[in-house]
Amino acid sequence: MIVCILSDSHDRIDRMLAAAQSALDEGAEAFLHCGDLIATETLTELKRLGKPIYLVHGNNSGNLDELRTMATRANSGIRYYGAEADFVLAGRRIFLSHYPHRAQRMAQSGRYDLLCCGHSHTSEISAVEHKQGAAVLLNPGTVAGIGAPPTYAVGDLETLRFEIRELPRE
Image 1: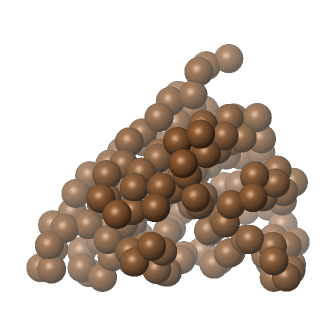
Image 2: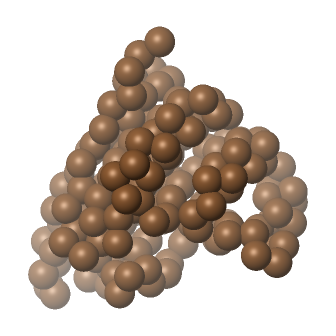
């Protein structure tokens, strides 16, 4: 299963949709968002692409009550977990947090195949060795391009191979 991993969109709908559409063109079947989405209107636009969205909030969280309401509507396609997510997708155990230190700490547990975070606006993919093997720790950077180039990640949950992609600068 191909996934698109986004973070720190900060209401930059244009850039988030450009990344999402590019990932869809590569076969993405789901979006994972690591926080700082901000306004739910941003999520509404992503939802229109018709793929499931797995989402946590960040430190710039916007209206969380509205986000919860949106996610609980029947057939919303949105799975909002609050501050941290722990779920299985395509047979892989996944952890999402906005904060890199939380993802790094959880990577040591050996419970996850993929751990995604944001917050730092710095893209990075690394392997974290643990007693059961290794996990992928991924920060897609900031799709909004705040203080860094606009980036996101695309990868395959079957092979656990991921790549950071950069959007063209304006």
